[in-house]
Image (tube, rainbow, N blue to C red):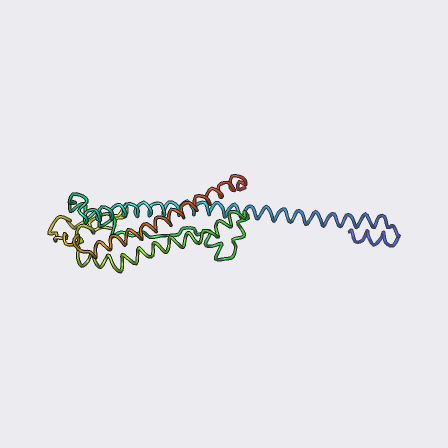
Amino acid sequence: MILRRVTEHVKTENWFAVGVDFLIVVVGVFIGIQVSNWNETVNDRRREQAVLHAMHEDVTATSSDLQEELDINIAGSESLKALADHIDNRTAPLPLEEVDSHIFRGIYQYPSFTLTLATYEELKNTGKLDLVLDQDLRKRLQLLEGAIGAVRSGAGQLESLALNKTDQYLLDHYDLRGIVSLRIGEVPAYVDWIDPAENRADISAIFDDPYFMNLVLLRARINSAYQRDAKRLMAELAEIKVLINSKIKREPQP
């Protein structure tokens, strides 16, 4: 319709009308582009909000799991100190039941690190991290890699020490009746038909074994590094959670 009007105005040499028609076309195109951009912006915000809500759940779950592992590891370090004090005769002799508990927490257990930042990992792997529109948050997420890698490395060292060194030592020199009967948190990972006090072999020789003391000290050192890195990651996750919360509050999901 507008084209027919322009043609008619040109034939009659009504240049003013041609100019008005041209202006109408330009304004119409401009408004159309603006509406399209506005719709795209709204859709981007909606997608970002969906991502932020999912990421908030991931960060919360990861922080909770990591804090649990960190608490277990800290308790393990306390048991290692108790064993070292016992070896160096700085404390009264420990009852066998306490020795079992300290061996279990300090030597037998090791932390696992399960990353539950599924949303962030998916965005990174699919090249869609730009869905997070906030530049500060996107930068913090990218910098998170270093902290995650350090905790993974520490957990890997503790697992390697357990599987390659301490487990074998316990098999060779300790009566596992006192360990396999202990429960790990709420998970029923224990042997309920073993009486730890029945037919126990004498394990006192390990406290005179320099190799055992070295295992205690080495485990304590790796624990210390793991706890440092885990606390750093916890702090990073807390700051990211604050950024996500502020973004969600500022732009609530429609």
